Image (cartoon, rainbow, N blue to C red; front, side, top):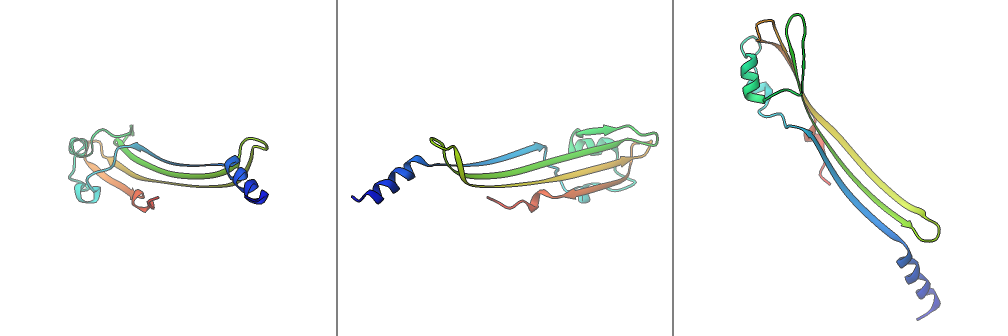
Length: 129
């Protein structure tokens, strides 16, 4: 075996590489679709609680409460190639982080009936790793 090959094999052994994949989910998924479940002027606070469960946040207002629901998803990947023994040098590093959320905000009048709501669905935009 030539010295060049021995050096190449020893160099490859000296390098280390690592890969990590992470997923973080915060909150509860918003089910069912609010556009099909909420009727402005008809749906009551108790119906909302029965359908979506307790909100993540309740904001008290003079003219009615606000319920806030949020669901966050975060995906991350990282690949690193480094020489950890002699120089502690990172030769290559790649990382990718995606974060999207679904949010539902419901405004109630003083009687506890839905006055208006806003819904944003972003988690379906996450690409699989």
